[in-house]
Image (cartoon, rainbow, N blue to C red; front, top):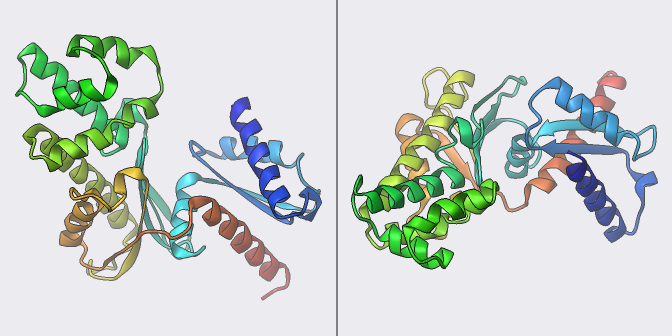
Length: 282
């Protein structure tokens, strides 16, 4: 936690320096942080940040999915966002402020559509093939080559040598490449990931009725994260959209042109404007 706070302070000060200004000019800050899911989490962040900026500044703390959504809707909180990077989450907001989420519970509790989930299943498939418990797959050759090890026996030591989930998730391009080359096991893993991601979005949209009572209303779906980058022959995001469209034909996919940090800035601006209107009675 301390390392995260130090990093946040460092990048905020770098941004102010780049803008040729300082913290005294700040009127609002929105921190959009992974893992902030409870009021106690938010309060801890608020207690910390209020010591960094002027007393009249306004502070807001949100889950990182909220900024990701705002980066695609230019600050308007309405619709659904699907994040699939190392982890995955689907998060939705209605125009009257109701929220819902699906997945996002971390690797231990099954973010199987995430980068970690895809890569972990690929590593498991290699071990099973080596044991004779599963079909042979080109993932064995490709992953051994990528990791520069000599056999699947060394995978166990490699996997547990470093607890970083991101280190596992970095193998996703190997899985995608194998699937593009026709490997059945790799294709099955990716199809399963697509289904998991689509089901997360469908669950959120249904709970919030973002699709309208008849299921046909349009709603924005913001797509964020390395797993959903649509520049590959095996287009994971495209397949996810196809699955969702079968249930909700009104889905409007958006790939943000700005990063989520801009979404957080837009949220700070939006919150500040809303408070000003309330104070002015308008």
